[in-house]
Amino acid sequence: MNFKPFAAATVLALTSLFQQAHADPQNIKVLVGFPPGGGTDAIARVLADKLREPLGANVVVENRAGAGGQLAAQALKAAPADGSVLFFSHDHTISILPQVVKNPGYNSLQDFVPVVGIATFANGLALAGGTPAKTFNEYIQWVRDKGNGRGTIGVPAPASIPEFLVKVIAKKYNMDIQSAPYRGGAPLMADMLGNQVPAGLAGLNDFLENIHAGKFRMVAVIGDKRQAIQPDVPTFAELGMPGFEDLAYYGFFAPAGTPKAVIDRYSEAIGKVIAQPEVKERLTSMGITVVHMPPQRFASHVRTYTQHWEEIIRTNGFANP
Image (cartoon, rainbow, N blue to C red; front, side):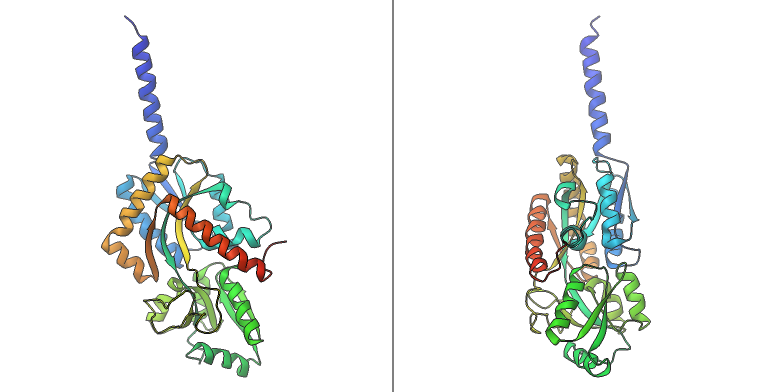
């Protein structure tokens, strides 16, 4: 009896099974670089819950909060490139931090591969309930009168677009307005609710719940047009501060070297999930604009966005030495 064909077939079958198991992990970890309770965490948990069925896996969110998402990004870099670990992030950790931090511990272009983009969103300036101003111009006048030109605006992370914008506001109005960096949107919201900080600049999705409850007031947003969910709020460009029109993004990333078949499968599954009416409605209610960007399109979007902010960062002196 000739065992060679049988042995060869067995090896092929085992190899196929190994590759399938390697490409289809039963447990998928989604890293989030910010604490539970913030906008990024909330979105990640909605998607993780819905992805369990189409991926046939246990999808779990793991918060690695700290350093503006750097800890989570570093964990992704060290993770196996087999689809078992993903990183759900927005632009700050991927496009901005590597340009303003000398040694972030990762290189977004070399260490990660974009899996899928799921949304864009606007950052905005909101006022706490104890701040008497009702509009952006009233806020500026309030800082000038009550604070003698000195004020504080909370931001969800240091060296972030919100922090850059605080500096632009201070420069434009020739006032000493300083940023107060937090470890994510959730602790910033808590301090604003307690009126420990009079204003905050962060993602619109971080503020919405308290805006709807009448506890915060949004007075300005980034973007080339007003946001549909806050149509009465002017853009910073309308207020005389152009250059902040590009909207930030949300998306999934995998370690470099992850097989293309795995990336494509995840992109397709996530695209189908965010297209579900109930999921899209829920995400939209969180203040983001749902957009499915497959791997190649998302990679292009990230590059273009990063280059846009590279110029702003360099021009305004925020680049790392």
